[in-house]
Image (cartoon, rainbow, N blue to C red; front, side):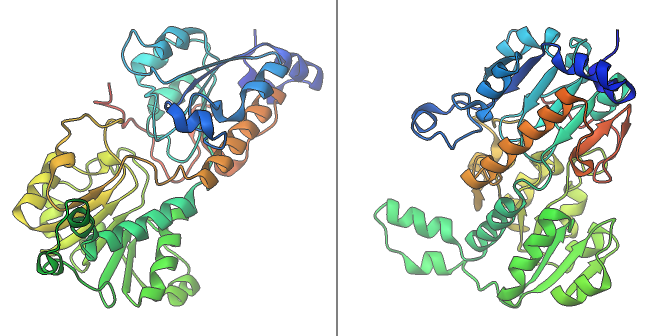
Length: 381
C-alpha cells in the first residue's frame, strides 16, 4: 500500500488511482452565527466551510466541519483517527500535538487556511512524514494594516477616548494626558518578511525612524528606499524603539522571546503591538511590565491558547487595545485563503507538487526557512 503523499514517485496511472481514492477531510472552523448565515463571504466559518463542500463532495470525498476542537471528547477528536487531511486556521486553531498526531494513522496533510502553522507540532509532523502547508501571503496586507491601526490606537490613546463617548463622559485632559504624535518616533519590527516589510512600507509616510531585526537581511536597496536601520539582535533593537511590532512566526526560537529580561531592556514608556502569535510573549511578564508602567501600552489580536479564556489576564490589563484574532481574516483575506486551501487540496488529490512557498514541512523535514523544527504547541490543550 502506498500513501498519496508519495504519489510523485508513482507512474501516471498509479497517481490517478491514488487521487481517485475517497478521502476524509476534517476541518476545524469558528461558528458563523447569524453573520455566517447572512454573509456567504465569511468563508472561514462552519456554515460556509471555506467554500469547499461542493468541490469535495463532487470529487467523492467526505468533508467534516466542526467548531468543537478541544478535549478528547470533542467532535474533532472523534473524526481525527480516520482523517486523511486536516484543515485548521490561526483564528480558531485545532492544535495537532504529538499525542493527537499519534492518534491519526491516516493523516497525510495538514493545511492552515491562513498563515502560521505553529498549532501543529512540526517535529512530530516531520517524524510522521506528513505534509504541512499554509496559504502563504494570503493575509499579509490585512495584518499589516491592522498593525498600523493598533499602533495609532495606542500612541494616540484612542481606546480611552472612545470609552468616554460610550460612557457619556467628556474629559479631554484625561485623554490628552497619554496622547502623542507618531511622527518622529522610533518604530521597529521583529522580522521584515511578507508582513513586517509591508508594515515598514506603510509606516514610512508617517515620517518615523524605522528599525528592523531579521535573520534574513533586506537588500541594501530596500533598506535605502525605506530608510530603515537593521539590528543584529532583537535586544539591540528594542533599546532604541518607542514602538515595537512583532511580525515573526512562532517556533522554538521565538517562543516566549519577549520575557521579563527582554521587556526590561525596552525603553520605559514603549508600546508593543503583536499580531504574530501570543506565545511569543511571556504572558505574566507582560502583565507586570504594563502594570508597572515600564510598557506604556500593548495591542494585538493573538492569544495563547485560542480562543482566549474569559479570565485571561490580558483582558483586564491596563492600557491595552487587544481584539480577538481577526487581523488576518478580513473578507478579502478569507477569499484568498479559501482559494489557496482549495488549490492545496487539488494538488494533493492529483499528485501534483505544491507551491514551494506554501510548504512548511514535507517528506520528513522542514522546508520553510521561516520556521525551525520543533514544537511550540505545549500548553495548548
